[in-house]
Image (cartoon, rainbow, N blue to C red; front, side, top):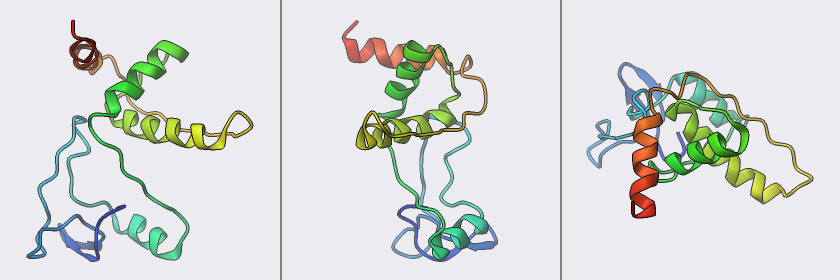
Length: 126
């Protein structure tokens, strides 16, 4: 949504990430439900109206946010929510200690814990 351009993706008009020829671009995600080049038309409509903004985060940032939430709050989010947590942490730093940020978490992270632990160990050189 943040970098897509107007077009049709899977039968609806939205803002998919597209190839130079206009086809939906291949995308990847470490979270099983997020490897998709576009989102529903209601999101594109809300963005066009200026009611929402979208941002991007990388697959490399998400395990760090997942681990931070686990270690600081004892919460174990699904990796899909980890993307939102990644951006929430960024916004919280921008707002400072007087700011208020709310993030919605969904899913269970126990299915992703081994993957995240492996990434964290790898980055620590273990």
